[in-house]
Length: 235
Image 1 (cartoon, rainbow, N blue to C red):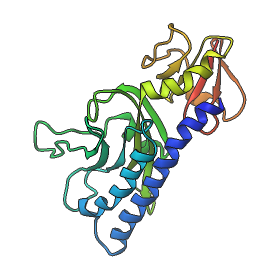
Image 2: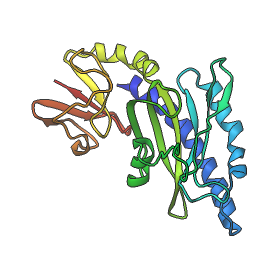
Image 3: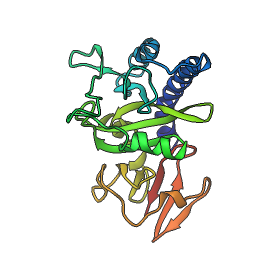
């Protein structure tokens, strides 16, 4: 499964660079007794644009999503960039005023809620990304913390079609039906029509799988994909 790990670890490496930069920005503002502003977060843009260019087409969106209430000049904020229809990068702009009916509350989405709750990086999806692209996507995210306090997430989107193209040849070489699931049991890719990407694989508990070795549940074998928050299910 080295190809699976390598594909997603490249994306997580980009997320990690965003996380480090965001922590410096937020930490710098707090060090002088201030809350960070959207203008401060604009300093992330050269890094995000470089990531989109260097990792195209694998990364289809990248940025920092702030914890609501943590900024000086906005109730919530996404410093998020993605390719437009012409391929040129453009910022994502959402209705982020909680007093308006169109408010886009992102805190309930797995890609924000899981890192916020667990303090760990996460692979969320596949899901239809109605906020950013209307594409079937995976989101890889990591928590941004400053002084032990959650400040938001660093994240990157990967269109499912690009991820499947990278890992399906590996899955097809396996001698048994197999699929990759995230921490919630959502299927990210498989080698059989019985398990459609995006559906929930019921009867498995990925959280119970040890860090090393195989683990059996209900006649299925589950094995972690190294340090990735994904589990290979076969049988």
